[in-house]
Amino acid sequence: MAKVAIIGAGAWGTALSIVLARKGSHQVRLWAYESEVCDSINSRHVNQQFLPGHIIPNSVQATTSLNEALGPAEIVVSVMPSHHCRQVFQQIANGKLLKSDCIVLSATKGIEDRTFLRMTQVIGEALPRKALRLAALSGPSFATEVARGDPTAITLASTDLKLAESLQREFSDPTFRIYGNDDVVGVELGGALKNVIAIAAGVCDGLGLGHNTIAALITRGLAEMSRLAVGCGAKRETLAGLAGMGDLVLTCTGGLSRNRTVGVELGRGRKLSDIIAGMHGMVAEGVNTTDAALGLAKLVSQQSGKPMEMPITEQMHAILHEDKSPQDAIRELMTRPGKLE
Image (cartoon, rainbow, N blue to C red; front, side, top):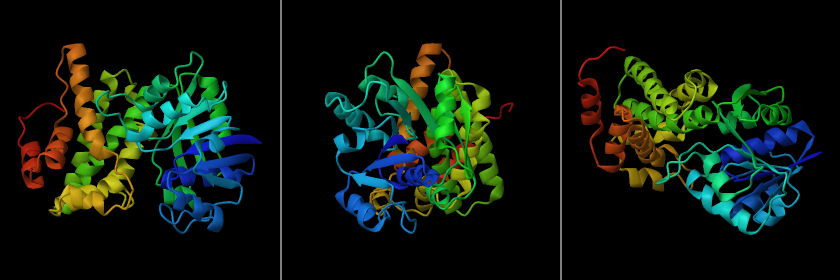
């Protein structure tokens, strides 16, 4: 029986614990930062704060102790918010809490502030091992739908295809289909950058704009995501797959998307601080990713000597952090100089 530790008991981490536990071939320990979340899972078998209404199998044990969660683990799944990733893995490294042959799978969709690193890069720096086995999981997957067993398909990427195939077998079940990929850069950046476009889609909805606008935004958003990802070394076809286009469509159109919801409220005129305060501890990664994406684009531009156009991301940054009106942002996007598609 494979021993798995999931670090982060938010909605997505909890949903993954349910997927693994229902296979009946995994011992799952779920690390929660909040003691009340841990108590809810262990006593009532439900994560009342982050994933209410979904029963968690008895084989999932929650704990607030990293040592207890990681001690027996053969596979570690990182599902924490991106801004906590480095700190938590440095704590893990300092405490020497991982087995030497442990596999680390990142399921966090974000880019680190200031360094502009992807999550597997952050983990690789925090766990400086020559033989560290890393992979990334991303794709269109609302946690509540995964937890209730709706058919879902996502992508698991590693530069070591044998490792990807092994994890593919470990995590797949009849309702959770995993495709392998060797393009870690494309899979991680697709999962991170789509959150920015999802905020923009929400803004359009909040302004009362229609399907024409959303279709244009998704299409040009994909072009923007692909441009930056390819500039970082990704394969363009990865962005046309589940971790790119698939996840983009989901988060831009699905009512369960936290990033889209933030955009809807911004479009209706609410302030970002008020929106975040009402999310009760849940995280919309796109808010921080907007800044990081622009920083990464600037870095790639400097390295290549070529401009990296990110018009949608730039307007989202202005709305989120410069108090620009959504109406002005849309107007500027629509009146940019004409160009070939």
